[in-house]
Amino acid sequence: MNIIQEIKNFVKTECKKPESTYGYDAFIYHFIPMAKYSEKLTDELGGDKEIVLLAAWLHDIGSIRHGRKDHHLTGAKIAEQKLKDLEYPAEKIELIKRCILHHRGSQHSTRESIEEKIIAEADTLACFDDIPGIFQAAFCWEGHKSRESAKIAVKEKLERKWNQLHFEQSKKMIKPKYEAIMLLLE
Image (cartoon, rainbow, N blue to C red; front, side, top):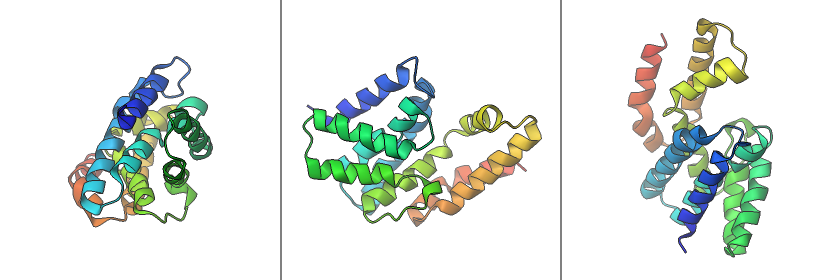
């Protein structure tokens, strides 16, 4: 069994369910870029690639099943149970849970391992691959009524995301997109 493929398929199935909070778009526009950036950063910075990729696929599973509020907590529980069901080693499950628990920039968590830092960083990088989704959030979930207020909110969010990046490799990777987006949002 390829554990990474098994978890990827699990997340894909969860995203496709009618009760999924964000639907299949989340899989395509967030989880896939998240895994891509996680793998790139692990290649450049080190860390356990299997742990990183499993955490990348599972980091927002709580949000898919239960919504955004406390999704790092619900996600860690879901990930733990799924990985236990697959008889994954307990010590590795703990590392994955730490990555999920500490991935949110808004939580200001202390990230100790390189894997935790990579997951948080990749989650931030993935935002720059889904500008339409950020606008959708501004209009639908944040309640902006005008294009101008949504544009300002998106620009401010992306500036915050840029400032959350810690690794030079991340900034180098995403700088062309960041600069292009900022130019378009002037």
